[in-house]
Length: 142
Image (cartoon, rainbow, N blue to C red; front, top):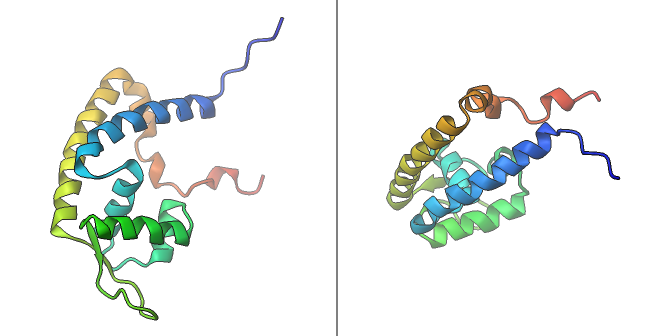
């Protein structure tokens, strides 16, 4: 008879993340956004003129992936690169349409946050501010 698996907080958080990611993507669908596009657009809005390399670092993706994703945002009219010619540094910015989409996404996200907090108030409180710590900070030196 197999032994029961031990509890894993990592697996639990990954499972919760997957569940809530589906819920958030449902809310974003009509806005032309996905969770990743929302995150990228939010970074661009927070730091107008952000470079592709900095955007990739903050999003924990490759620079090539950042270029591809931003191209999709530009094609959808949500972002622009004011200096999009070869050899020039990028000047990424959110368009008015992108700002409106982010504002609506934030309103929808707030409703999901309230629902999550009602379902798991202790966990919601424990998670507050966790995303602001450098990733893997506690894993360094191991």
